[in-house]
Image (cartoon, rainbow, N blue to C red):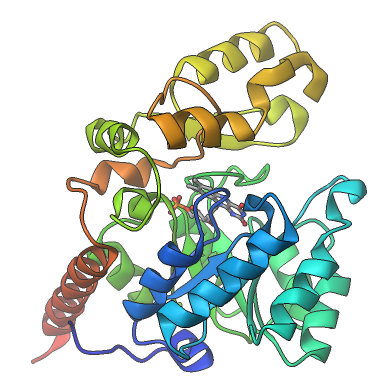
Length: 330
Ligand SMILES: Cc1cc2nc3c(=O)[nH]c(=O)nc-3n(C[C@H](O)[C@H](O)[C@H](O)COP(=O)(O)O)c2cc1C
């Protein structure tokens, strides 16, 4: 493997490389998160992906076994609908009681959650899609910020700004380490983020083709055929922007939005999250479901172990930083 790199985020999280694998609904389970951790990165299990507390608890146990004492994390995504957040504090307690000390928080009004995690001695990376929200998370005690641009697969919020610009806007405004996410899938981009003065990156889409992600091979093979035009942002009309694969479902959603829909109910079953799990991920039927995905999928050319993707990213980042340094040497 490439030699470790030292930034404020590697020091804070105790990892070799400045790469965080963001939580992935239905997909960041124990094998995937353990693969991230064992490859020298940080990963976060998503409790919402499990049908029961027992399933989540088993995943925590399995991840602890697979990582053999190395720290791993849990993603706690707050919804704008309070009733959807009833479980969050229970999942937090479960994770804490099973020894987890790393959390990626995301979503709406995180201050009480960040405070509770801090009281428990946890390390919180708060993911935000605007500088304003990121600054308020820092004030609430977040130990690091993951700032995501509009390229992000999944829910980039109503932000219209691209990742690189967000990074430049963030410079010198935060005391805590900042990592950038959204559209990152090459080592040269990691080098550019570090050269900009930020502390690391957060990746989701580029990792979807790794061996350890438990989806049908036909879905992964379709991802290899995707390019930078294969994703689309939908549901802006609901203030709930979602970047997904362009497929039959996405085209139907687009048509309903164009016709003037203004309520979740107008989209019926089309936006049901479990369709992604039951059809695309389980059976390879990628035309069905809202399949969170960003344009960095264009950088994926092979289905391979996560460790190999990380190695390629870090080798390229090292080479790029070395080349960059040579530009200014006498
Ligand atoms: C399939 C998929 C599922 C995701 N699910 C979640 C989630 O449940 N919670 C969350 O905070 N972020 C989620 N995200 C966002 C990722 O954690 C991460 O922020 C994003 O993938 C980074 O941008 P990129 O896809 O351009 O690399 C998801 C992204 C993808 C691609």
